Length: 162
Image 1 (tube, helix red, strand yellow):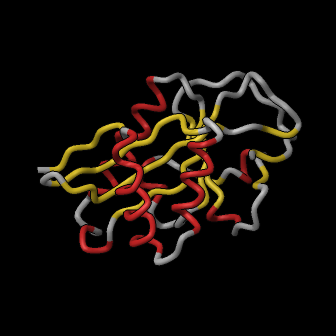
Image 2: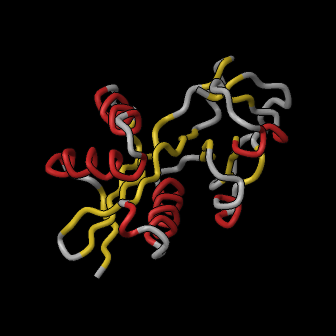
């Protein structure tokens, strides 16, 4: 049986392993540790199946340049599922639960850089078309945003979401 729940400190090593296995490198595991250490983690969820951690999703706080305090947003990075458990709906369940939790916590928007064929099914669309620029080199179609709560009227010309 699959359970989606918030991470605990006892999950940290398991989360590192999920990200290492899912991405076949250390970058995402190190990113999670850095964000957690800087208190930027807003919503961190794990997928657990029969007592084993098999997936992870981290939503972290976003800052804007120039500063825009009225916008309360997060970014998704990473979303990871161990390869043996991929294509079973676990990533989708992590996404759906993450979106609900971000909504409950009052975040207005979720940003991400990801596969243009995957994330639109959750309502994500081009962030560039809404006037947001990404601080990272990313294809226009990969830079996406989802409005999860009503956000105040934001300036049409905006710099980067960090």
